[in-house]
Amino acid sequence: MRSHSGEVSFPGGGQDPDESLWETACREAHEEVHLDRSLIQKIGELDHLTTVSSQARIVPYVARLSHKPLLAPNPAEVDKILEVPLSELMLPEVYREERWLWPGSNEERSVYFFELYGDTIWGATANLLHQLLMSGLQESEDTK
Image (tube, helix red, strand yellow):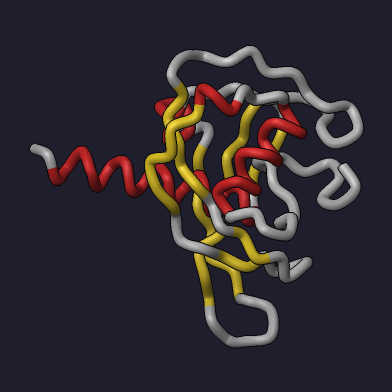
């Protein structure tokens, strides 16, 4: 919780020397929530993005787990773990989209929000969730 304290976010952090970005993602998930790396099967990547506030570059990966993991928050980095079914994220009472004027420009962009368990997920994390959900919806439409 050194950076982005109080925000809902996915595990993440800096890349170590001689480590691929995929290895970084797996290591950070293990360090932050004790995700067993042997359960992880990489599916692909979402679009890369840079956060507005800290200019952090995010390379998000999507993975499948062989079974439901036993997770435990690292108290030095994580306050609590939220487990949310993907189907719940698109419920009208959970999901909303707003148009905001982007800082430093006259351009309006979509900003996504998910209201869960008394927490508001927004910013980069909500952007990634939205992208994941839309790619899944597109995939299911393509297979019809």
